[in-house]
Length: 393
Image (cartoon, rainbow, N blue to C red; front, side, top):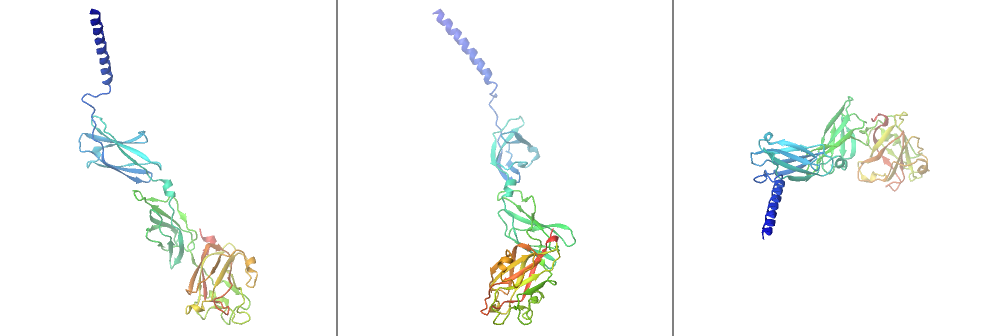
């Protein structure tokens, strides 16, 4: 019996010693009176910026709260903020130099004793270069001189576009930036612009939920310079033999007079009137190295009656070798046309766009049939728009 009591006593002492050891271990992790968790940040939100994020939150009302930290990238990066710098208790802070990917931000409050609150977590992503390059810019529909200014017409704004601005050369040689054209606009005036010069443009974008307006990093050059009405005073034109009627000779299409009295009319002689093709071969007489680039032609026919608008199928060639107005094998000899279309009779003034514009000293207009049963062709005036290719930059 004594032996049993002795063993029980020894076991009790050992158990007491073991519990004392465990208490010593737990004291390293358990704070007397329990751990204090300050109030965590409230009313948190985030806005996207370009390569940055805007974080917003409110400090709790507890005056013992002194600072807050924002952690990201698995807490390898952080920023600290002192609430005394924000007397209204509302913080808006910027986390910049971010990559174009998703981030998780943890916001933690700290009191004067260094106790940390539970974190408030926000996951969001900035927008960056890959987002920007995915947005297409406008394209130029036309750019022509309008008096002393250039009138630029562009396509409608693209997704998330907020503005477009321009850089161009003025008549005095200075380079200026001008803008901005708004999303609901598609025309813009470049004041006092130098004709025949390339201009540049770029647009700004803003995501639907974004905060930063971001301009494209590079300028886009216009596909053509600012077009102007070309000087045709020295241009020469020849018609197919026998395809001029009375005083209505081919040179009248470049006399600057839009009138029934000053026009080209093809033959009315029964033996030649219905002969096709009828060709106007044009020599701009441009000097080598200063050839014109033709981007559009405004074609004028009868303004009185649509039944007198005879031009039906028209093909245009531009090149660096003369065209023979009497070449019946023109399809093989003239090369690739820059324009070929069946014309309508709806308007007396029609614009023919040549895209891309074509550089060349020589041009040929080939008429292969007529709306008139007798085979007549009647052209009042031909007004070319373009530029001097060597002077465009």
